[in-house]
Length: 634
Image 1 (spheres, rainbow, N blue to C red):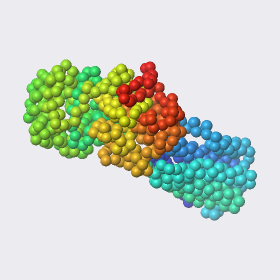
Image 2: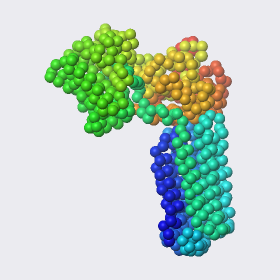
Image 3: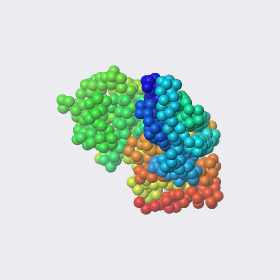
């Protein structure tokens, strides 16, 4: 026995191991859901290679018969995994995936069931019958005679049928999907490439590991087959890298969006769960590689720490690393019992310089000033410090930081008079110097139209039928404004340039998916909060929605879909119905609220009644204003 005989096998095994690890770490929006099936196929192929090594390490008739059966069983398992991957991709591209999608649902598909039953029969025949015999064949490398499994003619024909089934069902399915409308060019190439590679892998495995040893009687050509088949697996692993631009969506999405160099002021009261937004703001910064400086009232410090932990932030870890500094206002500003503006400004500038020196992407400052109690309510003292020109701008021009800095300053206005609140807002945000996030003013602006409060609105999925000649966009704006005021991740699907887009385009804390016929694949829009999607590809819409649901920091999501009428015109009633079904299943959470728009006059009674039956909550809007058609009990 010569070591050189094992080199092809070892090279193939090492390649498969590396490919499996690399593929598991890749992110591909079309192929994420079938990575486990690729791993199963690769491991099954590795088992076939190990069988070839065992033939040389422990040569005997029994070993040859056992290796023949286990190798064939591994190939049948790989065929099952390939079939599952093809059908999964077909479901994904046709409908989009539900969150609770399970592979067992695929076994209800008739063609797939026929495919699986045939493979199962082959597995039973492999172990119940004697499909091969052990023969001594000479090795051209060592000259030794080795027992190898030689398949009987009837079983070779059966294996050829397995190859035919592999080509006719999963591989043909992949190839046909590459020609579907709405599949972008890169994805189409990847799908057809998958089909060709699986056909090649199956063909080479059959020829070199079954046909040639059984008919020609040559041992080493099996190893040649391993090398070719490993090459096909390498190509498949490369194709898994083909992604859509949807992967550029954030893994976590904060409902308060501040870009580089931006500052915002937020107003709240004790009735508002401020930690819902603050924890998302902090986590977004830490995961982005920012240094986060968090100041809060001294009496809330331990509560803040506990809440951050509750929302999934490892406070101790980030403090130990220096990425998070959680301190009280008293500790930061009143070290000797009194406020010293000069000392505070110098300290702030030094910390900013330190963050830049240590290589952090941004210095993210979160100042929870509360009700100014640490300054005995004298808010103008803090404003004088806040507006100091040394922060990067002349007095009264607002704090216009360089891109390295991001700041959110929040005030508790509970118990303050309207005049005092107005003065504070004017001083800090006058003439649109900085963004204002008011968690109080619009908290129930839409809910009260329905005689509900916001808690009663959350979790509803509403069908909103409207007259296109009415001011329906105002109602939609109220719906979105309330969601933003309650710090919910807000997502709007609407045609590019639509009345809804024009009305909401100035809102900074929402994500737009603009539907257009001018793109065939997801494309970034004019800003980082806009993405263009093909208007006739419901699968990509569902995929974008799923990613936003997964990225929501706390699960509170508000969706506006404008509109089902446009979708009906693009993909027809049947596909629109399935789209809504899948979307509603994805929005099953009681924290997800949605408004689906429908132009009543644009459709016949069959279309409208078919879509209505999917919604337990329905509204209509026309000359008489908002009419409640049906509201479910909560």
